[in-house]
Length: 207
Image 1: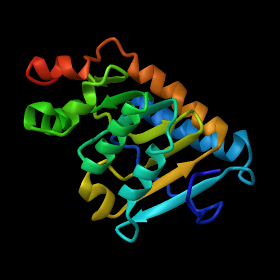
Image 2: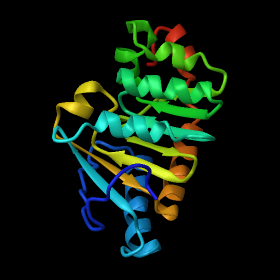
Image 3: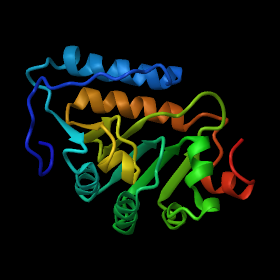
């Protein structure tokens, strides 16, 4: 079950444009749709869709991150929201292994060199962050918690993205959809051209 949330309907889906995504990101979206609708059947898929600004998406993210016991794998186009970063730091304090994959342009704008709050998070030994080194945007806004819950959707991990803009946040606990995300995350996180986030910072930001 999805933690502490009331489902808004089994068939309440929003499909958004993948035009700006790279091949691996588009492949993940396609795999997610396939897994939910074909892999296990729509009747068994457990999905919630939440919308900003009507709802506080920040609180939903924090609540889900707070449930993590073992692992968080996060692909974040933007990671600047203080409450989300604090929740990730609390998870790191609990010993959760956290992997974060970031967009190079947004990391240069919001990362430690610009006084971003992410630096203390990246200092934990159980937090592993990499920046997409080449190519088009790393445009995902998604993460998996303990291999059991998946968050995706259009909402960036920024204060405006979670509270002011017209965005959705989709929670999924379908095992095949989560497996599809983890498979794609492993592939994009392992790209040979990805610098570690702190090394990218020390070099003056990713190029």
